[in-house]
Image (tube, rainbow, N blue to C red; front, side, top):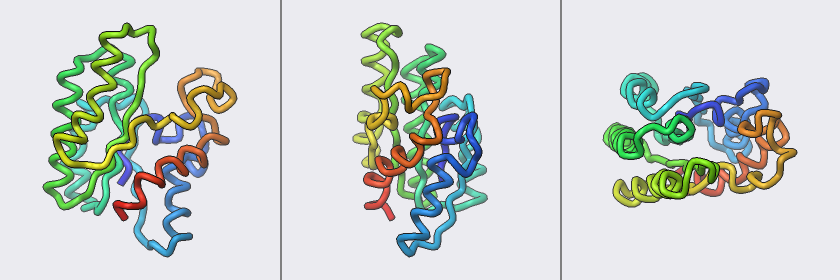
Length: 177
């Protein structure tokens, strides 16, 4: 189950172009018949995700949860402590339901200030370490410096970037499968 924001919801693309959709094909090609359920919502914060997750876990009972949330918390300047608590609770809920978790981190532009950016970016490795879960440190690592890989809003990856994102995610996800 993929549980994220617009970066996982194929924002402004055809759903079939998004990395989460492409993941289904990758699984099938590797002989894995599991279904990928993408419950990502554009604009979602960790607070919204925390409210939605219990029902999603009960309904779908995933073996693996790919948790990609927090970017909107950061872009809105929300509380770092609350974001960390929310992510920790979501990881705990997923683990208690029997799912393995891949936590996917994000980074913020430096214009948010060194202190806030540093605290934001530290959340992901802290949560992963404290909850003993897998971590992909930065979703956009492979494309971050290539402006051609982003839509005109300069926030959301293009269709051409999606297979690159999937390749990066796959390296962290495959050991959990």
